[in-house]
Length: 424
Ligand code: AMP
Ligand code: GLY
Image (cartoon, rainbow, N blue to C red):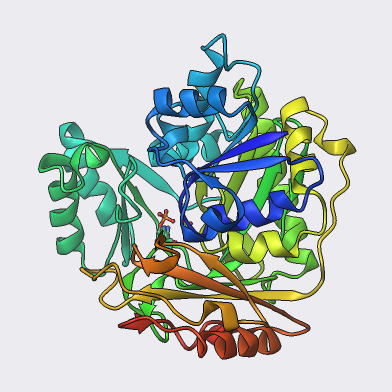
């Protein structure tokens, strides 16, 4: 069977390698892909939110299943587009329709959903420029730090955490009245700050049945010791040592089950991944956010730990018999360290040649922002490659990732040398 993956990052390279392990996958296409997917699949240079171009790709290449990597095509309705088209409607799309994608596309929707279905999350209220004074009054009832979230997609930049009440009021006004994050911040969720340590749990669901995938912790800040600007993610670890069986059991009972049941009650036929961002406060989970896709770089540690046939699981999602599919995970630890361009996440240079990758033996190199020209690989994005390794312990896996990194070079390469530092 021919499969199409939409997306271009390390997540999509990891999905590609995993799907190609399946005997049922004949040919794999990635749109637009990167230099890593180019080596193992056919890249199609289209934009995943150009649905007519996606349709052409699907029909020309006899695609029988589509996996959507990033959130934008889901929030814009790629799955609905397939269902509304006679030539595409029988081709399963792994990823929710617009109604389910609102869990990520609207923070206000996702908070309402959690409240309605009893999923633990921070106390909140939503505001627009029409009720800004009520927003100021609500802020006054909260203790610092203050959390402001643009309702819509803001490229991971729409969350502000502020220490002073004055600053929080000013920023709230900037967001709703002056569109600090464009239309995404016409509505703003103001919520209580959650204490604890963050981790992510991933669920694959056919809308009724679910599999809980390995948990992971990512490192979002650019600097060591979790300092500096936020990034897309600088590294990740799976499993998360503090997420023990008792905690994960609470996550399943208090978060996963009510979420799946809530989707059903609300008539949302959800087929795909749910990425649950959680705070663990003394063993109690609280949901920070839902995403409607897998995380990046979390995918680069989660998928390698899955022993089962991922395509078979996707067929279970499409046919709503996920409960009949076998699912097993290795107990080994996987770590990944992201190599980024100097300057990232601010302005950075591209088109730097990358060398040494072929000498890496102990790790899997997942390409993220790379391109290929005349058989040479160049940087083409801020996050360039994720270096994933296995170990019996986190320390062993990390040592392998760092030894592998020593073999890779490009101008102004940067990476965090302390992934996992808080878990040792
Ligand atoms: P989000 O886009 O909702 O994941 O928010 C981005 C980041 O802000 C999260 O990964 C957390 O580190 C932090 N954050 C968001 N909401 C809260 C909260 N209520 N309390 C503490 N930290 C938060
Ligand atoms: N690594 C966080 C994300 O994919 O949103």
